[in-house]
Image 1 (spheres, rainbow, N blue to C red):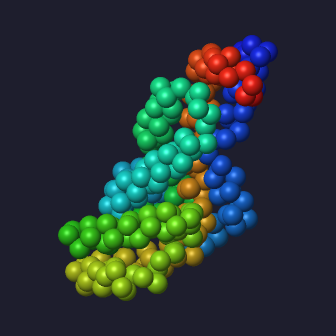
Image 2: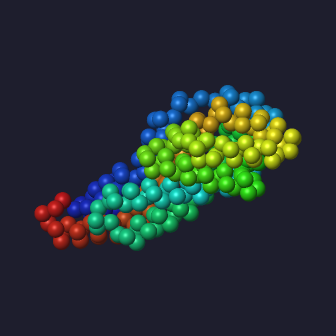
Image 3: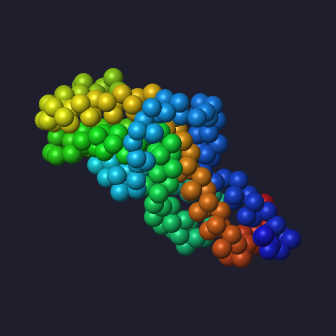
Length: 244
């Protein structure tokens, strides 16, 4: 419940309406949600992916660092849409809390729907060692460039895939696979085959989950600072009575 003076009764609802808009977009662009039938053969045969295993994978692939960079860029864009009177201290708190979100915890339920522990562990092999670390760096840069060009979610991951040969990514992947033992190669190839049919749905759902979390942070922070926001809005209105 919001306790507002009548003269500023719309302050929080208005600000809430300009929270991270990609939640709805991510959900509307996602395929119709169904049971992960493509993973039915995986999950019963493997233990569920655990937090430590998923965290290792996300860190190795550069996903945690990359997604936080994307969030920061989106927050910077969102800041420009806020009224001039919006307190910087409140905004700084929003940014701090968003960047502190535990992405592994947010993504874990999504991954557990589609991939088992053995599969995720095998996928992590690609990003280990000097070659794997370089793959993570190059792929992260490619995806970030796609996002900066306006792509979102799964399309950002896939856009620029045709440049993987030119940027050396394909060669590094081939090199890394050759570095694996025969047993590791077999595990990785199997895991890659299991990931491919569920990748788009998984990607869209994890992006939507993070967006929902960001909106929770945004709304909770606005509610906690409601009186401060009302005061700032009223002060701005009194300073510029002709401007609504």
